[in-house]
Image (cartoon, rainbow, N blue to C red):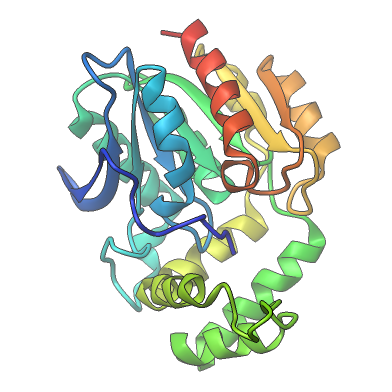
Length: 288
């Protein structure tokens, strides 16, 4: 589960519901001073949310970019059916992305993290016209690694018979004890409250459906390579969801820009925001 540095948007970041032809989506929207030189749509990963990009808004705004991070259908503060998995078919989620891009009213740089990358890819394959570029952040060519498939299966099995609150407590019980400060207090208590709130607001049907997608996603790299859109494969230096060598190969197959963020693992956006922002700025500046 991704851990954003905060759930409180920094100054200058607006939280609101973006109206689209496919319903409203909760977003965090950061605009630079003056006319933006570009707009980016940011899609979070499995069990994540728009808050995963909080640390990127300010450095990207300083360089002139408007960034709009979104909760997808059934994620955190965007509603969705609790028990209808068909609502979360990849094609449905891809259509949502196209509607979000259209609602922003300008061609956008599209970025998807992990599961969000595969949904982004599906949207581009449906219609690349609303996009200036595509960045796949820690998002691989096909299904996730075997070890991660096992973890997702455990989660899906638990969600089939337990409430979201019960699953949260089960996940917490399997984690190592939190480090405490000298006073014996858990320094991450507020963080855990926010993480629990986010978890409970997710639709279980969304998690089950998208978890299945992660475990069965086919390799669509050849299809994506045929789309004449600038592409960027960005990851941390370590990743247990898709091996780094697999991401290297995918970048070659896509003829994409390849960036490895030092000191980062599966979430470069939270592990090393300054270097991640710098890499995005360089890529977007080249593809305005």
